[in-house]
Image 1 (cartoon, chains in turn cyan, blue):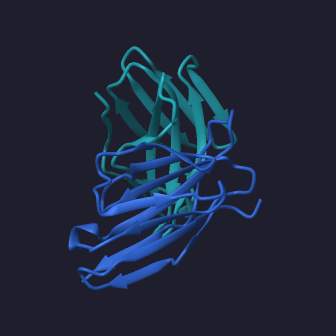
Image 2 (image 1 turned 45 degrees about the vertical axis):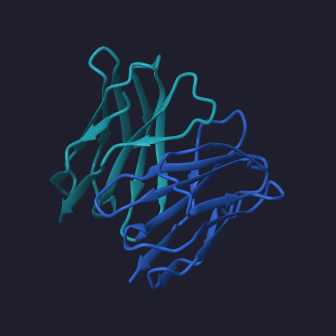
Length: 113
Length: 113
């Protein structure tokens, strides 16, 4: 079945690294995404990874995918107060014609100055 | 690209009234999605259009909900006889055929009194 889970809250100090974790249950996931949502706003696509990749790096962001354990993580290096937001992981499924996104419940990242 | 736009940004209505929301996707994006996000949750898929054709509807989309995309450009989502449980953020996203990224609008926040 389709289920994406995330821890609810993470607090870090400015300048530290943040690691946000996500687990999914459907082994037919094709693409996995990270979105950022600031208060009252829509979702901003940060990065995504294809399911046959292990890692993707994009400036301060590193995505790690452990397909065996169905575990996805987002590492934010040198976390800034502007990174405070809710982070959602999402997946699309193989064979799905629509590429609809299935989201987790989100992780609230609080960055302390 | 000017981004995905949605109108209105906020809507307050009384139970039993009808409401209509509009989404303008990024130009040349032939795929359009509607999602609903309730407080503390990730977005949930409602419906998908490819050009003007509505190709998938979630079971969340009851008979009171209808969506259209008459010319394959903007889309409208109408809710008839609104209920308090319809209170949520309604998000629109668009993507280009052959690409995996979905870009979200700022959302329409609906409050049903």
